[in-house]
Image (cartoon, rainbow, N blue to C red; front, side, top):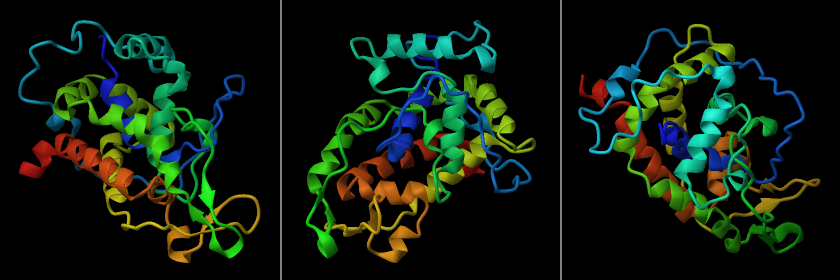
Length: 265
């Protein structure tokens, strides 16, 4: 069970690093979850059973005999798993550990929407301030800003997706429970996850310089078409062309693993 939530962690890094500029952890505030706007999708497109690899790795990453914790009691297991997995790293710098599974599910479901619920992120903000160059009508994203994402992307790239899918399958009931709690009593989280990955993969390619506007305090894209994009697509663009390409490559690999059986049919 040492790496029991490894797929969750990597997907949170690969997808979830998208939203973390100024999100602060608020552990003393009770976590509530918004009722989503989208209706349930009938039927299951990508059954999780079809994502299981044909064989386990030589060194198993899960203990199939150990029962799953209750969703409401899973935080301690996650913290222990992350501490073992990232030995030598201060995991508090990367992750928000309370209600981690619920936070991840909320984040995934909201990436295609216009706004992300800032208090529901499973990882902490990318360190440093958002950097811009120029002034007035000539504001642009400073290329130095893109380097802030390097540690997250490197960590996500270091893990082989096929090795982790078995873990995701084993712990899928907790993801599914959290998704139904969110307001999808008939929904299927793996389908939603694949849908969100496809949404992010379809983000338009934008080359540098990326021009900005600052009508009030917050920065916006100067291009109205970019500013009208979903939160996930907008911030994927904001991390820079090279980083965006690397994240999309990671997401394609996970999509292949999560939909392998369905795509063969």
